[in-house]
Image (spheres, each protein chain N blue to C red):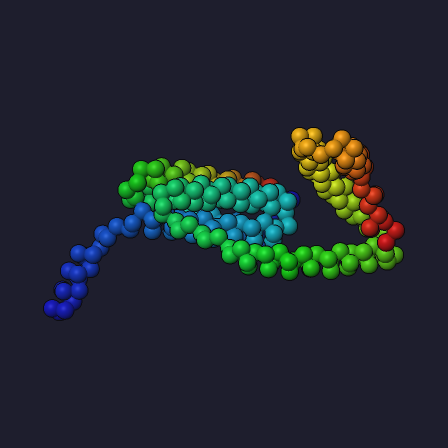
Length: 189
Length: 67
C-alpha cells in the first residue's frame, strides 16, 4: 500500500514532462515520412484511376509538408546536417557505373541488332544519337572559346608573322561548323 | 467506377493516419516554444485536416454511386 502511494506520487510528479521542440518536430516529420510511403503504396495498388489520382495528390501534399517542416527544422538547427560522401568513394562509384553503362549499351546494341528490336529500337537509337549530337555541340562551343583565347594570346605574342599565320590557320581548321564526324556508333547495329 | 475492397482498406487506413497526424501537429503547435515552428506545425495541421476531408468526400461520392 505504502509502495503503491509512493509510485502514484512519483507518476503524478512526472505526468507533465514537456517534449523538446526538436522531439515534437521530429515526431511529426517521421509521421509525414511514414504517411508518404503509405500513399505511394496505395497509389501503386489502386486499380481505380479516380482513387489513384486522389492518392497521388495526397502524396504530393505530404511530400510538400515534409519538405516544409524539414527546411524549417534545418534552419532552426533541429536536424543534423548530413555529411558529404567521400570524394574517393564518389569516384569509385562513378567508375563502376561507367563500366556498367558500357555493358548496358552493348546489351542494348545486341537487342537492337536482333529482330525483336524493331521500331522501338530504332527510336532509341535516334534518342542516343540526339544526346550525343548535343554533347558534341557543347564540346564545339567550348573548343571555339578555347581557340579564341589561344588566338588572342598568339596575336599579342612576339612570334614572327609567318609563324603566327600558320598557327592561326591550323587552329581555324577546327573551328568549322562541323569539325566532328557524324555519329554512326549505333547506326546499322 | 466501383471501389475495390483493397482501395477501401487503403482509404480507411489513410484516414486514420491523417486523423492522428492532424492531432499530433495541433499538439506540437500548442506545446512547442519556438513561434516559427509552431506556425509551421499549425499550417501542416490544416493541410492534414484537408486531406482527411478530401478522402471523406471521395468516400461519400463512391457511396452515392453504389446506391
